[in-house]
Length: 274
Image (cartoon, rainbow, N blue to C red; front, top):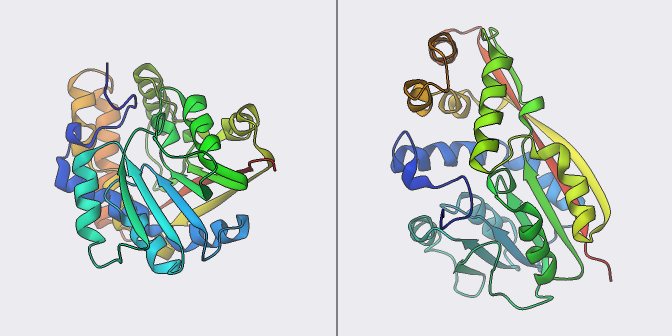
């Protein structure tokens, strides 16, 4: 069994760990201002005790520490290698406002009713058992505390111009691969029901767009880096024409001044009843 109980393991990244960390950094930061604006709208404020699950290399953790100087931030991840990188990134932060926890989101080992606010960013699409994870988060939240899940839904992925041949077919194949592996690349549409099933109330949902003309093309280039997809082509999950379409999209993003891209992220918030 996968020790992470998740489809994501950075040590298996097709582009190598260091390149994957760089990709995660660009991905995390390109939408941060909008995400933080929404987090505050959902109720996040300085002075709260905040848990970030699936913190990875700590890019969002660093932003939370900088933006919430009076808050106590707990950054949790099951991957020891990623936590090492997060600790190195946050070594300037005071011991009083950030702590790192190596644990599974399914079994955090944290006390009941401990946190005011929990953030799970691009975590739930990878989870084998999303309800089990949501129940664990519900347990550690204080009554009145909130969970915000930031995730994607490939059914409304976004857009790439010039258009990619076989785009929807390629997306469907990745949805199917993720599902076969135990995750869900269409998790976004299910988030309200997931929160309701867990016991959350006052459920809200919103979406944000991230456009390359506004935040830069770099993050989008890495999303279409052919090296990420080559193993799927070699194993037969993608056809030759599928792979060539991805290569063409990547080339356009690198060299074509008329090329641009947009991604949609979904945010769902639930409150633990008092």
